Each structure stands twice: as structure tokens, then as C-alpha cells.
Image (cartoon, rainbow over the protein chains, first blue to last red):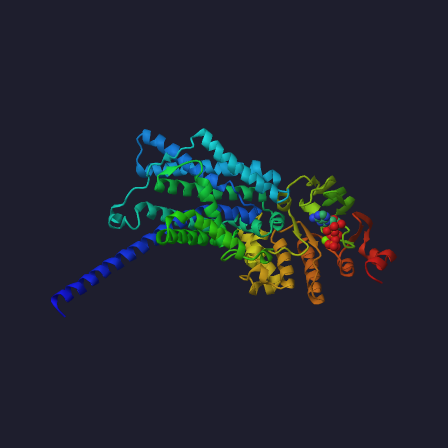
Length: 323
Length: 235
Ligand SMILES: Nc1ncnc2c1ncn2[C@@H]1O[C@H](COP(=O)(O)OP(=O)(O)OP(=O)(O)O)[C@@H](O)[C@H]1O
Ligand SMILES: [Mg+2]
């Protein structure tokens, strides 16, 4: 082999190595990006699934709770900035405010829009939920604006992440860790506390739960409050990551999280988490390898397919088993 | 200790209870028998507050309870083993028992009562970590009774405890009901299709037809009553 041949050979190896490094980096970028998306979807999906588990209602206004959480955080963050607060302290205070405000909304929505319809035909609360969703979107649009508002990036960049920022940013890391912690707390609540036991009992057999002394109205309220708090945290984290919000962000996020909940089997808590990650990855890889134009279409197509072919979800129980 | 005075109940337009009068004294075992659809289950559900009484009064230990929510009624010491057992399917036997003690906070006593029900029904001990939904029918009935006992009820309501069980297990369950009544002075109100066994177990009985009580007496007298013999004992 001549000199030229050797050089060519070396070039090819270099190029191949370079490409394979790029290829792997890109793969990990999509994998971790999907993880971040997925954890947000999971946080919101949990609210859908918990409510459905107990009162068999798809709470269409849940996406709006998430949107209201993001708006609350934006307002509080702007105020705190004026008063001279900084990064992490703003993030924490704004999140707390968002959680409180969204929970109050979730609690109130249940009391005025769903509770009076508890004995009505199943379609009635569903229509009420859609009405609530439309009402809240327009309320925020009128009270705020229909334009996109810039959302400050509240999540700091960590020094130790500097070399990896192009693959997995500090913000993504924080989102994932926060979501994981919250899901662990929820698992503890549901599995090991008295309230959690009351929630599971009410979901499995409401009448028997009442006979056992469970105040089911209270359990339902706590479920709405918990779900709303999770959605609010999701709203703050994603708004801070993406950098802009408007009144309609709850609609798309809500439908996607709903897709995640259905994917995992609506009513199942681990199902919602699994469905969230599954959808996050599916979207991330589809947009990364196919085309980003199809991002939303993809989620909806998945929803339709699941509803047609496996309505009980990936790990859900079939209807017959549920009773 | 329990008194139903002219109690009525409706399901939509259907009047399921048409002025029911029943009273139980403390420590008694009383049975309510009647044909399918007579309103027995509705009577128990009215006492527990699940089906609201649309007229009349229900008094428990002298106080009206017909306007309380089911959870408040349960916490006064009224436990029900509903028709069809209603075991929490996706909870373990242990969790089902803890659900029975939901209104209680006295951990030590709860632990003692757990031991007590495991003594009553030793099969449950082996199955304590099994999911409720995977138990056999008889085991589920034992669990349902144990769960009700975990509340340490003053009044135990049982809706057809013999339903779908082998005669041997039915006998065992009725013996245990008597034992609970004897040992803890628990007042027991049993709804039964198996009138023969119910009338042998209870002190007094009520016969219900079409949403009204048509007969009530000591069980020894009901057993020899011609109408009861013909309609409910098949003799
Ligand atoms: N959820 C309901 N909705 C409408 N009607 C009902 C409902 N539950 C019971 N009923 C009606 O009320 C009447 C009394 O029913 P209930 O269940 O109290 O009878 P029962 O004496 O317990 O009968 P069984 O021995 O078959 O259990 C029946 O005519 C029944 O059809
Ligand atoms: Mg009945």
C-alpha cells in the first residue's frame, strides 16, 4: 500500500470515528431530551390518572391548571426580580406560589364544576370539564394577553455540567431530578400514608370506602389538590426551560399528558409515569431522526392508535378486571 | 340501641322502603328475612347512610343518624359487611384489615384486634400478604367479617353472610357471629336468605315484604309460624 493509500485509510477511520462520536452524542442528546420531556409529561399525566382513578372523569381542565401554574410563577418571579431576589431563591418561591395557586384552582374547579354533577350521567361532568378548560384559557387570555410572554430562565447552570451542556443542560438535569423526587414523594403518599390508603380504597370501591369510614369527598379534594400541585411544578419547570408562555400552553401539554396517561393505562399511577417517559422518548426520537414538523402530530397519532388497539394501555387493567 | 321509625327510601321514583319500623336492643342478634327485592339491603344501606332515608328517623344510641354522612356513621361504631363482600381487590389481606380500622387511631389495640381476627379465622394468617381479589369466596367472606370487626363495632350489620358458601363454612361463620356477640356483647343485625339458619341463630326476627315489615317476633315463634314456614322455610 502506497503513502496515499495509507493517508486515505487514516482519513476514513478518523471520519468514521468522528461520525460515530457525533452519532452517539446525538443519540444521547435525544435520549436525555426525551427523559426531560417525559418527566414533565409524567408529572401532568399523574393528575389525569389520579382523578380518573377515583371519579372516572377525564379532567380536561387539568392542562389549564398547569398553564395557571406557569403564569403564577411568571408573575411572582417578575415581582421578586424587582425586589432584588436571585436565581434559585426565585425558582423556589415562584414554584411554591404556583403550587398553592394551582391547587386552589384545582380544589375550586372540582367543587363548582364536578361535585354537583356526581350523580349525573357520565357525559355531564365531561362537558363541564371541557367548559372549564375553555373558560380558564379565555380568562387568562383576557386577564393577561394572548401574546407569548418571555419567561425568565430560573434554573442556574452548574459548573460541573459545562462540558455536557450541549447534550444535557443543567436545566434538564434539574427538571429530571425534581420530577423524580416528586414522583417518589407521591409514591410514598399513596402507598404508605393513611390518606394514600383512603385514596386507593376510594378508587377501588367507593361505597366500601365510605362504609369503612373514609370521607370520600375529602379524598377527592385531596386528589385534585395533589394533581394540581404536580401540574404546577411541571408548568414552572418547563416554562423556565422553554422561556416563553401563553394562555394556550396548557392545551397541547394537557393533551400530550393525557396521551401519556392513556398510554400507560388511565387510572394507574406507575402507568402514567411509564407513559410519560415513553411519549417523551417517542417524540424526542421522532423529531430528532425524522422531522420536527411532526412533533405534535406524532403524539396525537399515538393517542388514536392506542385508543383503537389497546385502550387499556401498556400496563393497564382491562375494564373487566377493574371491578 | 338502633331504632328505625317509619323509614322510607327511594331509588329515583322507586319507593324501596315504605315506612319501616325496626328496633334492636344492645347485645341482641336480630335477623331480617324476606324475598328477593323486599328491601333488606336497602334497609342496611339506609342505616349506614349510603342510601339516604327520604322520610322517617334512624336513631343510634338515642341520637338521630339519618342525616349523617356514611363515614360519620361508621365512626360511631356501625360496621357493615355488605352483600357481595366488597373486598378491596388490589389491597392485601393486611391492608383490607387496616381499612376496617380506618376510623381508629389506637395502634396497640389495633394490633391486638388483628391477632384476634387471625385467631378467629386462621386461614387469613397464611394469606395476610395475598391480594384480596385472589382469595376464594369463603376466604373473602371471612376477610369481610374480619374487616368489619377491626372497627370494634358496637353494631355489626351483615348482609347475606351465607351467600354462595359451602354449608360447612356457613355453619362456621354463624358460630363465629354468635361467638363475637357473646364475647364482646356486639349487637348483630343479620339479613339472610337462609332463613332457617338465621332464625336458629338470632334472638328475634323481622320479615319484610315489598318494602315493609309484615311480621316480627322471637325467632322461636317465627320458626313455628305457618306463614313463615311456608314462605321462607319451604316446609
Ligand atoms: N341502585 C338501585 N337502583 C334502583 N333500584 C334499586 C337499586 N337497588 C335496589 N333497588 C330496588 O329496590 C328494591 C329493594 O332492593 P334491595 O336490594 O333492598 O332488596 P333485597 O331485599 O336486599 O333483595 P335480595 O334478597 O335480592 O338481595 C328492589 O325492587 C330493587 O330493584
Ligand atoms: Mg340484598
